[in-house]
Structure formats: structure tokens, C-alpha cells
Image (cartoon, rainbow, N blue to C red):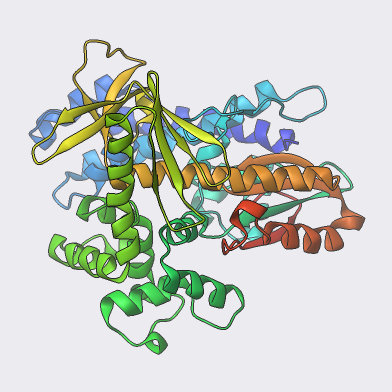
Length: 470
């Protein structure tokens, strides 16, 4: 269900912010820019002031410009206005309002197998890129009350730029029906657990199990201790060392390096030099020898299968392997669940040091891969190259999808009404009177993996909510 009264008030507030931003921009730019959406005019006004071409003013580009200490004050003010008034995520409010049915609910929000690893794709309202940085629940309620009251100035004074605050609260526009609640269950660190599981990184599997049982430290603390060489006792929940461990876990499992680490750095660590990031990478790899070996094994198995059509090649810890086989025009990969993934029209091309595995894909599904010249390339179909770490990422996304799908089927068989699922999170709706017992039972189900992954350290926490949140 959608909180339509608040969504409509938020959309109205967004229009007012756009008008005010245009008026302020007209003053700052002396009439050169009169609307926050007039990107061409804003670029043309900026260029002589910054002394270089302004290619883009998307979210990442604006953030990059604002990080420059030498940016002229008037340009900074203009970009801040653009940043808040141009929040793409707030456009979801209009989509919610227009797509909600007569019952006040959204329907058909997810497309089955919409992405190559088998995951669902969001349709209509894009639920897969909702802002994660939510305020506390009481602050969310206060902001949404101010939105309904149209208290634009108060929101700006008390909390900051209004559209930024609404964007941070977007999850909360999804609500339970009257007399009901939502229970949201999220698989914790499931890809990191999966990487250790399929590779046989046993020390890490033991660490996850100990953390789940509350007899050992969290994985971010443990990673920081192992790679930075500091005592566990000195790493607190909010310490910078824990943040360093988190960056490593997010950046390095799929063969990432300095660029990957920098992508995950929080603002407090954004000035970390490349040399330090490379040291983190090398230390993480030294601590994860089985995962590092898995990258090579996956790449070798996939390449061998392309070279020898009809023969099967395996990679992974015994009992958890993936299996590659080329049949006709496709390279198939059978996952531990028994489901298969497909890599269309595989071809080996000579690389700088060795042969590279390439295949055809819809380009936006080849995220992080390099497009290769091919006569059959088109805007919606192109040849990309891959490598061990990228193959492992595909495997993990697919395995985590299978864990999610089988858990949803189990919950469905038990009578749960699943109203949404986002990445590795399942949201059910039920009468409030049944919430406490249902939460405990849902948690028990989500912590017990299916038979094909009996030793997978699966873990989930479930929360009872009136509004969907984090």
C-alpha cells in the first residue's frame, strides 16, 4: 500500500521547491538560468567560471564538482540548488501516485528474471534504488507530518534541503494496510557469506557462524583486525577501523582494486591515499586465499568449457561447485541449486597476457565489464569481456537469488502474503495481532537454508513495521 496523502503532499512540495530553485538560480546567474532542470543553460553559465567544459551535471558529476575546494561560491550555490531540486528519486512520488490502483496499492512492480543472474527487475516504481540513508523512525514521522502540512521552510530549517529529506524517507511511503503491519526480513551479508561458502574459505564461515551466535565479532571488525593488524578490542562499532573493514568486504571479493575501494569509501575516509587502499587490497587477498584461488578456477573452468564443447568443467568447494558446459551457441553454468545461467555466444579472444572469455549481453546487464568490438554489437546487444572476479559476482548474485526465491516459496506455502522483495529482503503483510509470533517464525525460516545449501551460514533479522524502512 502507498501513503497517498503524504505522497501527494510531497509531490506538491517538490513543485514548490522547483519554482523557488528557479527563482534563486535566476538571481545567482543574473538571468542566465531560470530553472533547475535547464541543464544546458547551467553548463554554459558554469564553463567560463570554472575554466573547463562541463560535460555532465548528473548526480555523480554534481557531487564531484562540489567536492572541489576551489569552486567559485556562486557556482557552488547554483549546484546545491540543482542537487536538491533535481533529486531523481523524488520523481518516484509521481509514479507512486499515478500507478497506485483503486485499492491504494501498487501492483506489477517486479518482473521475474529481469536480470541475467535470474534476479527480478523493478518496473513502474523503481524499488531497487531507494535511498538507504534513512533518518530514525521518529524523525521520519516528523518529516512526513511536516510534508503533509506543507511546512517547507520548517523542514529546511530543522532538517536540511527538503527534497533531500523526502528522498531519504522514500521507503516510508510504502505502508501496511489499516489493521495490518509489515514484517521485513533481510539476509545479512549474504554475498560475502556466499563467497566464502562456494570457495571453501572455512575460517570466514566459522567467523560468520560465531557472529550469528553472538560468540564472536562481526565480520567488518574481524576483517579490519586481520588486514590492519590491530587488536580486536580496539575496534568499536563506530570506529574508523570498522569502516575500513567494511570497505574491504564490499570492494575486494570480486577482484576489485583501488577504484572499487574508493567507490565504497565513506566521507570520513574519502582522502585515503591510493597507496593505503592498495595495501588494504593486498592484505585482504592474503587473508582470503581460497576466494582468490576461486577467481582463477572459475575463469579456467569457463574457458575450458568454451574450448571443449560438450565437456563439463567444475569449480568450487566440493559439494558447492558450479559446473560449466558449452552446448550449441551458449555457455551454460549450473549453480549449486540446480538452476542454470546462460552466457550467450561465448568466444575466446587473445588478450594481453592470455585468452579472454567474452560473450554477448544486454549492455546495462554487463555492469563493470568491458565492451569488445564486434560486428553484431548494437545499443541493446554487445560483446563484453569477463574474468574470474566478475564471473564470481555473477555466481553470487545468482546463488543469493536462489536462496531468496526458495525462502519466498517456503513462506508462501506457510500462508505468508509477500507484498514486496528488494534485493535480499522479503516484506510480508499480516494482521497486527499475529505479528509477534509471525516475526519469530519468519526469522527461523530465513535462517535455515534449503537442502542444496545446508551448510550455508544464512542469517536474517526480521522487523515489524507500520512503514517500510531500514
